[in-house]
Length: 152
Image (spheres, one colour):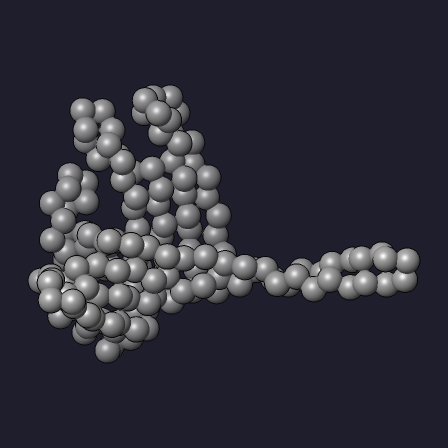
């Protein structure tokens, strides 16, 4: 994860200074209302898609204080998420990307069961772009990108 203005401890080529995550959760839903009329006829109406906040977990590190500061200030910043897999020669290759505009950390929880503390961050945003990079099983061929944007 990359948060504008906060340097993480990642040293992965192409992602140096990013924040390593242990989990990522994000989703959406569209409410459905089904109407039944005579003779068992049914029709459905669908609401506008509602997207959830992003929830991530990470191990506490040298960037933790800056992340807490960002939550306290509530300043909107761009945030990026990349999912990596092993590529040619074992080098990390991005296969999924998410960019969230005007993202704000709205909640942080830190906990530990005797080991290294783990932080859970909840992030809201105004707009996003999500891309799937088709790298194939052998990482050959064109890098097809599918993207979409949702406005605030």
